[in-house]
Length: 447
Ligand SMILES: C[S@@+](CC[C@H](N)C(=O)[O-])C[C@H]1O[C@@H](n2cnc3c(N)ncnc32)[C@H](O)[C@@H]1O
Image 1 (cartoon, protein in one colour):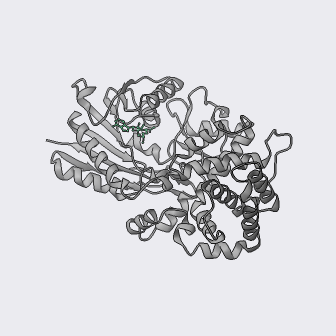
Image 2 (cartoon, protein in one colour):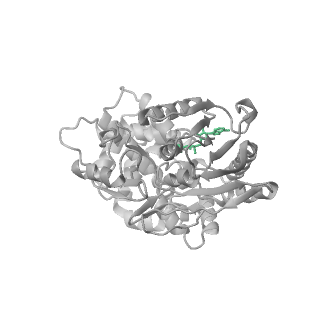
Image 3 (cartoon, helix red, strand yellow):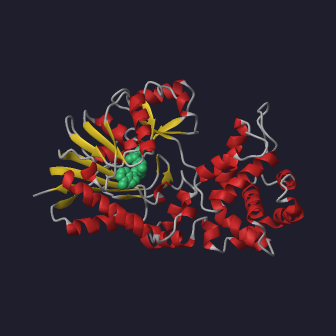
């Protein structure tokens, strides 16, 4: 692997050990961020340098995106399943070798060093060496054979692929393809403070390439630390996917309205709503620690809202009895639309989770509906591409609530592009348009 000159890094073998420890935790059910934190904290020999920690994250994330293929390759290379820790190291290294840039004997040598340095893996170093070198020799044939399995071809669980194929018979492959891409860094320009054109000008002045991908959305050509962006400290921009930026305008807010953001943390849509109008806004979230992040985001942008730690399913515990003109229910969901950003989610979800999410989402709208004023609007949104969390939830709700009316959704990604009345967005990455997957439904309350 190439190393930037002068950068302080641990040996690749040391990085591989930590990344493999994280992968083992992931295989046991941990989330990627939690697995990485634990593996880095428990590293024998102390903390890795920052550049190595970034490399570990990159290697683990690369493996998670290719895990279906790596698992299938392991099954083909191993006559008998090795220990979970050896399997994790082997699959981690296979994922690196799949990248032509990293597919070299040095990576294998370092993997063997990593195994030898670990008392639990030392005896398996010969096995690891033999399987990895066989992979380097027979790479093309092995990958082609493995990819006959759709899980290896797409790097998604079989039930996930089947669900998408059924819901999107013409586009499921494009959705999976887009879901496997690296996500862009997209910013939302606070147009109360600066126009998109002026901010693009400031970016150009700083030598940063970017493209407009929504009315307020700007995608950077290469990710970078946000605090180095022009205007970040002044609150001119926030990080938000272009698809997520559709939510606040769809709620159709105006100055003076009383608004409930029922699942607010970390505040992406709360702060967007407050950029659109002067609102009396209640930001509710069940997770106190996450709610603190809403407070931090409001402070950076110089905005104000009432923060409430509470359960959207139990409004009697926190609601003061005054109706809301607008309610946003950005409900907890499978996160199947944002797999570009959370690549591990696909391996942690189960098919049966969808029914649980769907029931909770329907219950949440049902619990909040009485809080909506007559003539008011409620926007239901999720970052899911599964119909069970979208149209199914809304159809169930409309059936049991005759005072609810589904309102048309109208939006446009680019000036002059024309509008679309679409409730389901899927992950998309094409020229001038780049967003995650979301579901939106706007409901009006009538007599
Ligand atoms: C999809 S995230 C919200 C993202 C947020 N709207 C944004 O744009 O930044 C869902 C949120 O719902 C919260 N949540 C989950 N169950 C909840 C409940 N019963 N009541 C209130 N909030 C809940 C979670 O803590 C999480 O912060």
